[in-house]
Image (cartoon, rainbow, N blue to C red; front, side):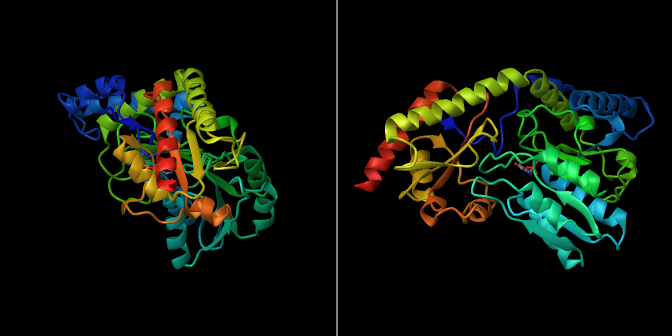
Length: 383
Ligand SMILES: *Cc1c(COP(=O)(O)O)cnc(C)c1O
C-alpha cells in the first residue's frame, strides 16, 4: 500500500536540492564559524552568504536576521527578548487565543514573571478583529504578537491593519510567520511588522533551524546566553549546515512561490470538490473550518459531523493516509484544540475536526484516493 502524506503543516521532507546544498557542510567543511583560521573562515563565509540570501529573498537587511533553532525558539526570543529589553514599565502584551503554543506558553511564563497578557478572541472563522487589537492597547503595552497564518485552520490574520495600529500607538509588533513563509509573498521592510519568526522544516528545509527577523530599530535582549554569536543576540555555535539548507529552502520557496501556491490551491480546492462529490454539499454531513477567503493555500480543516477526530485519523492511518488533528501534539494524544475552542464552534464540529495539509509532493490522484477513503470510512463507521 502506497502511503499518502497530508501533514505538511506539521513538517515537510527535505528537498533533494536542499540536501545537496547542505552535504558539503555535513562532511568536509566542518569549521566553527567563530574560529579565525581557514576552517572557521570557510564556515563563516557560508553563514554570511546564507544570511545575505535570506535577507534578499525576504526583503530585509542581513543584520536583521537572527538564526535560531526554529520557530519555537524564534517566538521565545521575540517575546522574552523584547519584553526584557523594554524594561519593567512596559509590562503588557497583546496576543490572540489561536497562537501556536510556542507563543502562548512563553506568554504564560511571562505572566508568572509579573508581565500582563491580553489574549484576544477570534470570530467563528478564526480571525482576530482589528478593533479588538486597538481597544486592548494600554499606555504600558509593549508588544503585540499575532500570527500570520494559523497552522490548524489556515486562517490568515489582518497583519497589515494590525501593524498600522501598532505603529500608530508606538507598540512593537511580532508576527509568527512560520506557516506564511513560502505561501504568502513577504517583503519584510515594506510590512508594518517589527519581528517575524520563521522555521526551515515547514518549507522543505532541515529541522532544528529557523530565524527571527528583528527590524533594526527594535531593541532585543538575548534569550539564550553564551558566546557573542549573532551580534550577541543568540549564543551558541551556529548550525552552519542547517543554515545553508535553510537559505536554499527559502530561495526555492520565494523563487517558486507563484507556481507552488497555484499547485497547492488546486490540490486544496480539488479536495473540497471531491468531498462534495463523495459526501454531498457542505453543511450537511461535513463542514470546512476556517475562513473561506483569508486562508493559507495548503491547509484544509474539515469536520465530518458525527465521526470523532480520533476514529477518522486512526482509520485513515490504517489506509496509509497521514492527516492530523490540528496541531502536532507532542504527547501523541488528542486534546481539544485551543484554536477550535476559541472559534466557539458547535461541539460536534470541534470533536470531529481533521486537518489535511498538502505540499509539493502531493498529486490530484492522492486527493481522489483520500476523498474516497473518507467516504468509505464515514459509511462504515456510521452503520
Ligand atoms: C511549526 C510551527 C511553529 C514551531 O516551529 P518549530 O521550528 O517546529 O519549532 C511555530 N509556529 C507555527 C505557526 C508553526 O506552524
